[in-house]
Image (tube, rainbow, N blue to C red; front, side, top):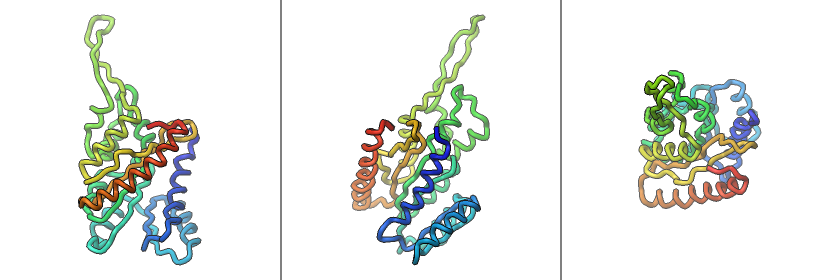
Length: 241
């Protein structure tokens, strides 16, 4: 695996957001790393007339405050791109997003980071378990990603063996199930993004918060088309999810 590939995806997402035409009314970039905030400042400064805020802080707390206290959703709409470092997105953040009426969400789910935490023998450190609970908003992930069965030891005693069963397709399916508990519409065809060795890095999913039939109809047309178009390209490159 090329270790800097996740970082390459992240840098690319900023540039793509700024290249959208017409521009959004205002951009919020939330980054806890001071060095990356300096980089963001340089990028934004190179875009004349850009209205933006760079917040050097924890994204969960800042975003929660921003969308629940600072924005009047009666007259505002937003596109949120969650592009976390590791497994830092907490479930309450997704809950807060889902409760606002005018948000389209693109979530770059950290599939590789999750896979690394899911130890093959099921012996997951308590700190990692807590992180996965926070990421999925429940502890039922263990039941989905592990199977247990009994064998006999050499002395005829029963021994319980735990085995990991978490291919990327199952992780993707479980992620969609969890998102659907919050959002009125979640695109059924998330995009699996792989590195140069065809190992899954991220799962790009799309959801909206507006429950109206016209909004869902438009979201289906837009989100499923975008994900399907790029998904076909990824499959031709053998990155299968």
